[in-house]
Image (cartoon, rainbow, N blue to C red; front, side, top):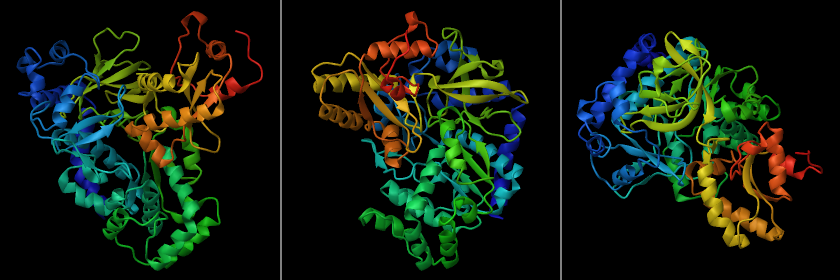
Length: 550
């Protein structure tokens, strides 16, 4: 009944979205007008010559330069200090942390206008799930939006950093209803560590035999959650039976305070079912027989982890997510569309052709099927012509609006599980760390990701050096500490989605590197040194006995 009410609450926004799909140019013009109004009269607008006279997309492109996370850094710092009307006329609600390309982290300003734009994309997506898959309406959902285990803070100017409730991206009147629909209370996010978050999350999930929908971001998140179920299963069964919750971590004031906000009642029958599930391989099917849908990333690097997640839930349908960034929502999945559909009512979008980066970016209605583009967005949160660095390919059109498949990062970023490790960041870390450890930078030094058969993916640093093994271990520890200054890398490590960095010794590194680049299809004259190579498989290449002739 509650989910039917939720579907009804989203119906108007969904109707407007589906009407807009037939006329994307008109919908985008409306988004641009809204963005311009939000920025009018701000310090940002004053820097743009003739900004009050800008009306059309072409005028906007001619007047406002393309932006990057680095180019807006000064404005973000002013906002963090408490300065008003810097990017938008609206006051800030909070900052959301995200990964930076050249720095450790970046802060995205969130306003009511930006949240409204998120809702223009999330509401049609939620409506489509509830309408197209009625079984999802038969029970509660676990829908993870905000990161677990994340501590909130404030900027020097007093603005909150980070959200707690998953419902925070929806309008305030809907949030109490959403909180009742979620199987796991939002207070779980207040727990101070990942292990206790997982344990308490599992308590509430196992307690719901009628769970109908699981929505996570990276599929490895779900795999790690099920691994924790196996690790702590008997303890969890005892807690369910007694109606208590004892996370397997040392007691702390923060844990006790968070648990005091939740209610735990005896669940003897669910304890019995859990013990039965622990004896079987298909634990998810035993625990949640009504589970109808899994929602997760299925594109780009996340595709590697989908099968491992699905094995816990045989027979349950998987829906790939669209592209949602901290800065805004780019695409949303619809069951009737060939790929996630552009969030045409959310923000104003432009698309750069990587083959012609100097050309005028294309608008949504100008895209061509089969072509790849880099996404640029302008939002009511004050980011104008902001280059996300995400590559998408046009898979077709739903009505007249493009359907876009996420391919990965366009700005030399490695993103296995959401850590968003940029080549520029790696270059800075290596330059700052290696000379102090080895006297000078080794002749060959390169980081690359590795996918493991029975462990989380991780990074390896390959060094051509005669230094002792103890020095390599010191280097691994030092580099890991610096990389963990980045929000997303640290978060992936805390969740266990990403394994620790290790340093491996190589010999004849430059030549072996060149040989593999040639084997991968590059011409010898085009090969460039790389501090971060996004192709996995380098461990096997460097450790093999022989080496192909180049």
